[in-house]
Image 1 (cartoon, helix red, strand yellow):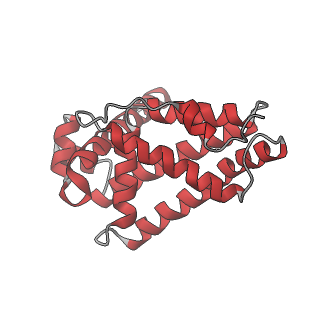
Image 2 (cartoon, one colour):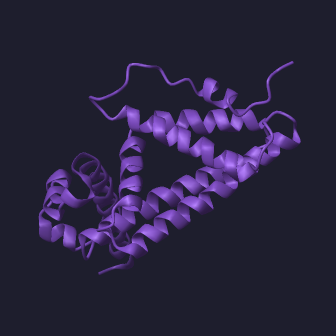
Length: 200
């Protein structure tokens, strides 16, 4: 096989792998960690079970990959926001709006919480998920810290405030499950106000 064909084959494999992960997230959100099967995932992806196993050795490997991808991407996004030169409140507003507006985030939040609280899940996977969640609080804490230095974010431990903020927007995301949405509009500006120093 020529180098060009090898590269093209690798690209196709990566696209297929990402497709499987996307479909896995939807299946897990609908059926739960325990009930989701490789057969369900294969059906959602339009593939055979054998084809899925060409990419992942087990259902647990799929769960791990979905979770790792989502948490790493989220961490990078928050780190990029923290590095921007703008008001910390604007950063929080952008993060909140982006999180709420991304359709698959409700499914990812359900999966994350299911893995972290399900005793049947491999302890290493649960610990890795919790570790990445904790690590991802740091860039959010940095945004809180920036806002405190500028006098626009309320006092308190920056990491604690970051934890409250993340928990709040993730909790609201759970109310956006398709077909079960709560008929109340989520206003990013109102959420940010909870962490902002009141205007005099």
